[in-house]
Image (cartoon, rainbow, N blue to C red):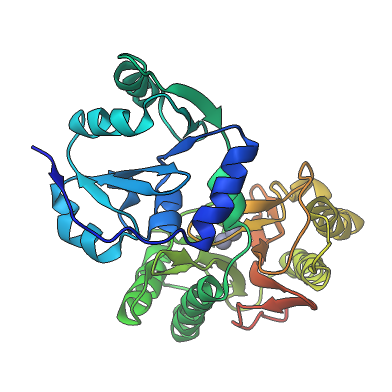
Length: 365
Ligand code: ZN
Ligand code: ZN
């Protein structure tokens, strides 16, 4: 039933070498990779949601099914075994026999783990299954120049889309029509939408993740637009809050406070900066305006093959920024019944400080 594809076994690349070092520190002989972004990062295969990757010291095998034979042949750096479960697990059992095999505890489901136990922990040389966390995610924190180029390309498309759609964000237009226009522009420019677009106008602005609804945008309102483009698996992420007509002084005050917090946080982004300090910096600015309690989420997150990945720019984080990380700074305030403001930039940490990748202008209110 299964077909072994004949493919040249590539030499270990940098990613595999670095992963192997992390696996050794974790006491692993092999790693069963299930998170789609991690499969893509290591193998190049873009449909990780229908694949698994078994990494050993010297090689790795990509497991996927016959729908992807051609695609895997084109994309995967590793030999591919084409099969459907349970044949997949039976083949992998022979590769994993006698080894200490890590699984991704933050991703593998309980039933998938039970399947692994059933297939790998019987027979003469059972594998030992070991819970592991963050091994590949740790590698993904620092982007290569090629990865930064993909993220930059995604952000450039998002900026172009916003520039085109901004004139349409006026009273009388439905939120979901704005979202549809943004998505259409990004698609026309060769990208897809990175996630469900937030267009939250008026009182809906109090919902941090207010997906675009059928609400008609009113006059003298603030409209929060959070969206991103996806190019070759890499994402961008940006939020702008714009005004229709002449918003109240209360709304303007919220806007100016968030802008001040956002710009202060961005200016402090540099190698060596503690993620928790950056979060506190933005929070302190909002608290000074009496708005600290309305900043209901953390300051930001890493962006790459996932929209939300490490490092976490939040109070409880012990992470420190390093050159090559791509992060967001996105303070917001959300007042139930009144509205909300969020402003988010996408920022590359450079050896000398930072570069703001998102270039859409911010309004002055
Ligand atoms: Zn966002
Ligand atoms: Zn974000």
